[in-house]
Image (cartoon, rainbow, N blue to C red):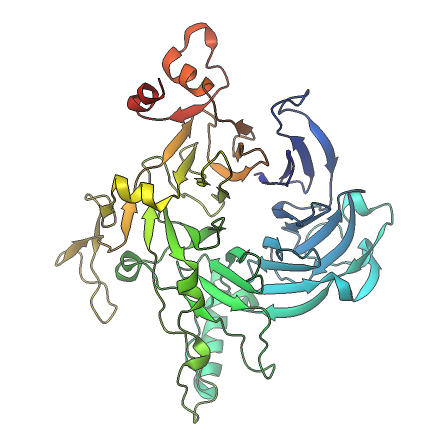
Length: 479
């Protein structure tokens, strides 16, 4: 499995299952072509789950299956800070926009953590860092290089865990029941109920104190203000607001979210959902949505935790016949609009291809949208108002939603043989994809794609090439 993210230049960083990072030049005029790594180093001894560059490209933060995140000085490729404390694999890492000292991490243990390298806790050596995996020291740090432990400034445990009102008696009884249930299943009681945080993103500059997150449990996106802190440690950290699930999820079954991408102007964010749909939300709707702090809580029940009121759901969605989010490793990446290029959202797929969706709303409205959730052949058991699923022999209903669905995407075919997971846009607007076939591809705009579409297999010109699978009318218009 490979994950990648492009910097502000033509270099692209790849992380792999062995904990190594490789830098490859994606520039069209590069002498080596898109094939040879310029720099390789190994900051972790376990798989790298996510990577991100600082705004000035001088630092790289990595999240790993060894339950740590690390900040690396790209000039020396040495670890300068370690962020340890998660109880499971670190799934997401992000620098705060315009700030290379604040880092947000999320993990499979269901927690979100904020770190500040300006107030590091202590200087240490890699041998002092203990995890539950393999040797305590990664190969890159065996030379005794020292680093600092970044200071934890905020922690949000159970950020997307469903919280139910509990009394002291019922809470203790529920804990005993859960412990016995986990023991019978062979799972650790301490990890029961964890909901993995699969997506995390800061909002753009000017709103960089706001953080949006999503999880594997459902399609709810939560907004957090990292400046807020509960008055006491006993009180949970509450989100500012949360989105409402799509109607089809409410009536049939929930689907988690794999990835979140923010539009260039910050007005929209796009959530890649496990139901093979990309949902578009209004950022302002989320910021001005319902706040849990203003919910009425009975004063006689101080232990009761109240969920936030339902906010607004998605504005519309994107689908494509070749887009299938088969696992949580399928991600998305957005290309910001430039002087000569439009804004495009790229998503991976279990069909062995990447799919491109144009995000310009005037264009999408002109093409029209399907009203509803798509496939008429999809038949699911209906759910009653009380939340019970009705008998399969007595009542069925089709998956219907009020969310408009656009199917104006374009698949990039023949580039991969297996699931496409990681994607990133280079500084020049080229798309880089990686898949489970251990192949990385660089896709460029130009007339070469038309030649591949129309030329067939003559003289092997399609060998190891891919192209955009567009309608024949597209090439006719270009001519």
